[in-house]
Length: 171
Image 1 (cartoon, rainbow, N blue to C red):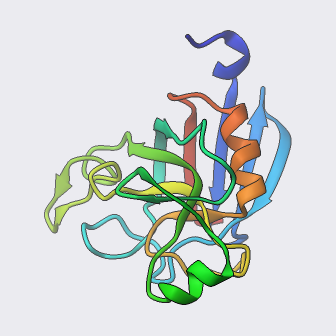
Image 2: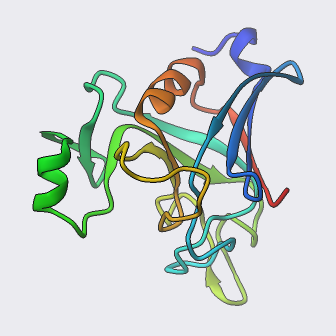
C-alpha cells in the first residue's frame, strides 16, 4: 500500500555527476555516489549501456536479505560477499544486498522496441543494486545497471516504494 508520503518521492540519476539524488516534494533529501555503465548511455538490448529517461521502480527485491547478500538472476544464492568470494569468482558482475528493478515509461526510448530492436529497460534487467565496496564509485564501470555502495542501497531501499519515479539524465 502506498501513501502520500512515498508518492512525492522521486529519484534522479545524473550520468555526468555519477550521482543518485532523492527528492521529496522537490527538496533534495539524500544524495549518493553511483557507478553507471562503462559503455555510456543507451537503451538497446545487449548494449551494456545505461538507459536515459523516465522510469519507475517496478520491483523491490531482497528486503529481508543480509547486507552483502549475493544475487544471481534476482535470487539470493545464500552467499555473503567478501574478499575471498571475490577472488574465487573474479569475472562475476556482483549484484549485492538489494535490487531496485527499473521499468521504462517512454515507448521506443526505454520501453518496448524501436527501429534498432529491443530497448526495454525492464527486459534488459536494469537495476539499482549494491556492489562490492572495493569497486570504485563516481566512475562509469557497470554493464548498464546503476551500482551503489551496499550501505547506500540498503538505506535507499527502505525509503522508496514500487512505483517511485526514477529519471536518468545526462547532466
